[in-house]
Length: 310
Image 1 (cartoon, rainbow, N blue to C red):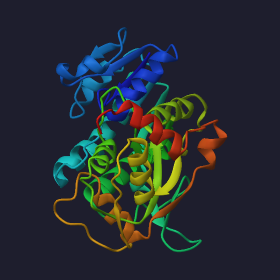
Image 2 (cartoon, rainbow, N blue to C red):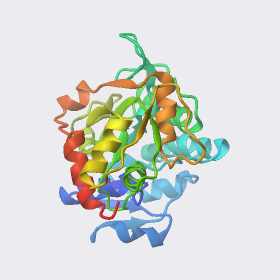
Image 3 (tube, one colour):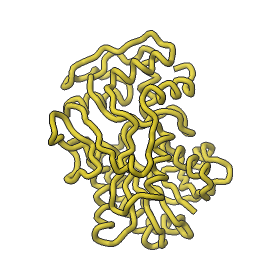
Image 4 (spheres, rainbow, N blue to C red):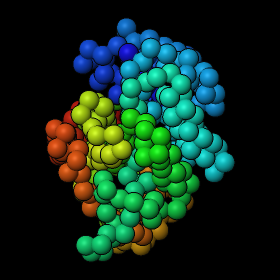
């Protein structure tokens, strides 16, 4: 049995679907029963709270593996720290109490975006140490959460791997959330300006496959970066517009630029990464596990077909 926290979220629901499709029995942590409609038939539902170690341990009873995806995105500082850091610490404690064999902790490229020793900008490196160059609450608390897991491996013998997700988009049982919102806004003509900076992009479905690879073949204490392709925000948005049949094209701003207050959700990430000079990715470990994600062109075409009316 495999347990998934954040099971009804954008990526979590894709992970549940993938595990189920591969024949694994899955138990999904569900806080809001109204959101459980995205879960496949045959997936067990269980109530648990990241604020309560005992409820987590009970939910994990009889489980061989745990995929921890629940996280606070866009929450105020204290709330984000309580869920992302405190919640992860309680997941680690519950894994130990329940005798779970392996934990897959889902992190983000924003947690390991460090200055690039090989040139300008930053690098998202599977071997990165020392946190992140990003200072926003989400990035900082996810970096702290990752440290909780890796410290438990180094000091307490926990069997855990970290699956680091770059900007996720594309089909998900949860629907068009995350960067899909930015893609759809561009196709509607609602994205005027965007900063010209390069970051990684990965289909949610491919992220889920990468999580399973990390679980089955990853080495304890290792981080695996799940990245499809590095491309600029303008390239991604304009390519999506073409596949969606939209004539709209974004106006490109240089790195270091700001966007107006009416910028759509996730457009501000081009500003954040633009101030760092963008980033490149080192993901040799994930590729060695057999991770073979689709590139931008294939992924965006698939997304345009899946997201009609965008």
